[in-house]
Image (cartoon, helix red, strand yellow):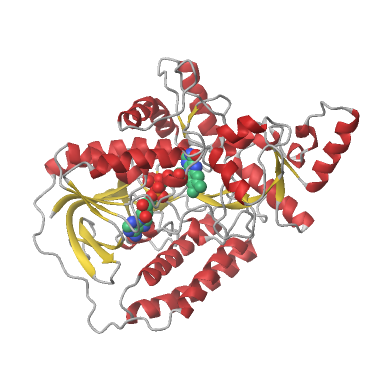
Length: 546
Ligand SMILES: Cc1cc2nc3c(=O)[nH]c(=O)nc-3n(C[C@H](O)[C@H](O)[C@H](O)COP(=O)(O)OP(=O)(O)OC[C@H]3O[C@@H](n4cnc5c(N)ncnc54)[C@H](O)[C@@H]3O)c2cc1C
């Protein structure tokens, strides 16, 4: 029996693992592939935070920007708490060995991104997440109390008593890469499984982002919130890849401008008579928002989507030729190299970009300590968001998989690494208090029942079902929704669910069936939440609502 099992090795899982281990707890860290396979590892822009907590104007401005991006439905108490705790948590990361870029005078080099009114984003070139993963993985590997299970997929939560109205976690079933299932008895489980971008056809998320933690916790009785708010990153490099490379918002923060091919031509022509012609004045974004290319992501992504539907093209252009190419290459070496491999020079060539699924704002409903709310088990609410008045005993959710209320209806750029580390710390504090008071655990837990199940022989149906799910979500429950499209998705997803459940009941678990089952269940929840949201707000945009 371990004290704490943590599922996921992004910033949220790794950070809390170090906290629990250093407090003397026996920790199991379970992760689906290698430790570094995570969205965290791909984060480019950085982590937002005001470092001088005495600068109340700067703190208030970060609070204001976060609430504004959240379109009025962010939880102000949570926003204030996270923004105020940012400096301490960023210092924790620095103490773990994270090297954020500094200016020559030793001050942190703070970047700007869409929706931020001030420079407040710490970064490590354009590979901030990889630097955070590097440091936190090193910390975890050096802690003797952490047992790391790589290539190990969390299958389902084990409940103390499945029939009880008061849900209590007793452990976890895990699937090894050789197909064997083992039981991991644990006093508390922290879900840090990240996002679910794989539900859509094009996504910036890694292959591990299939929403497993949300689906698993819902099966155990958890409540979810705000799943209709899925964020699409406006500027993924568009070369037809289903897992496109992200062109960080920080590039627009540094002056890059979104244009159609016609906008670019018009600007080039204008420059012949006026060499100082401002590219922003020629961008289609100006007709949508006064902030132009630096409007918040939802606005930019929808404007691009509208433009693509109007023109029938697959991408718009991110123009950087008016910027200093040498500076861009040194500020964004990762992006510059990636583009070079594709025959494009940043600072010279226009980059073709299109929106891709990027971040799921909603998730498991948690309190300010990352404890997961139990849902009302007697409710037939298809969104699974009707909370009861109690928590699932021993269950925590942190990072992208949780819905804390920080982001409201839309996430402000670079606030998610911040949210993950703040809540990871808080969950670490709370789980220790909880362990000190929690009752004795059961010593024996049920084994995974595999009697009578057969190996899956034909994989083609699962591959097709997964592709169909992703198409349905992209076409019908994506950036721009409508009632008839969502109803169509509802019918298709119900059918897919039936098919997948049929295979699930017959076959031994494999990663592909486990993920697909989770993806279909989560897709149904997202669709139900989208149908239930009766006002267009933030990331939710239904053409049939005014
Ligand atoms: C390309 C890209 C760029 C981004 N840039 C920024 C940025 O600049 N700033 C910012 O604030 N945010 C950014 N984000 C968002 C941010 O990176 C994520 O929200 C954040 O890293 C999530 O951290 P996490 O720890 O919750 O999850 P992740 O880092 O995604 O980690 C999830 C972990 O859970 C594991 N896992 C999943 N399911 C299972 C399972 N069933 N069993 C076992 N393990 C499982 C995965 O393998 C992984 O290790 C970006 C995201 C992407 C994709």
